[in-house]
Length: 287
Image (cartoon, rainbow, N blue to C red; front, side):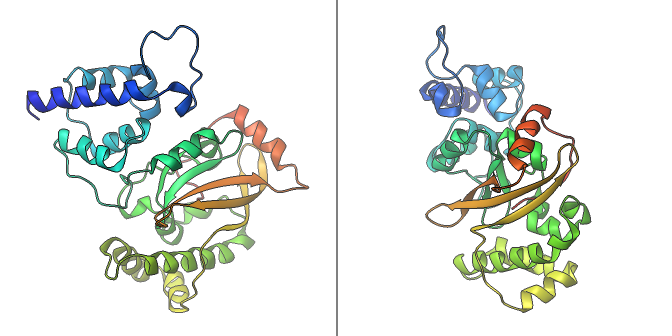
């Protein structure tokens, strides 16, 4: 990157940071704030970066940010789609398409996610790539946004990596598989004919998983809107949840939240999980 580009990138990040009110991202404003908008350290925490690294970016120095860091900054700063694309161009990175782990998270989805407290929640794409989670969802499911390539899609890991199923009760696995495939067929149908991302995912799963291939051939279609989900967490035991979804207007993203089922002790276990914090889980279930 040229020095001019670095300077422009730093100025753009600073301008976007200064326009955001702390309460918009779930931060208590406090009585002694000396800067408009967010502080640098707050943006760094929201983006999963070190304060030193983010400070260098705003100063127009440091190393070229990765695609993953740019996606995280776009989410932390609540950038619109045009702003997100501009950020990538300033960083001399290719503007990502709509899909995959670097997908732009719609600001309205992020705003709703920020406002959900005491309940695990996350935003994913229509191909089940988790883009962002709240802290309780990470504590429940592990960090599902850390995967790259086709493995970023949980449905890909469900049919290719046995570890993805390990905290589901065995009797729930077959119904979950059917539901995943029916939802994927609905998503593929919504996309443009010949969509490369969706077609590549289906082709790869058909080649690698006999179970997927058989279910796909059945041609069942069914959008996952709400359903029961049972999860066996290593710290708090069995949680009995209702998994609910809110879809973006174009159907390409969904906000999912996990509510405790009435008549169970899951609410108490979720409260305990919020205290216990995030467990070390390299993979886990996703909706």
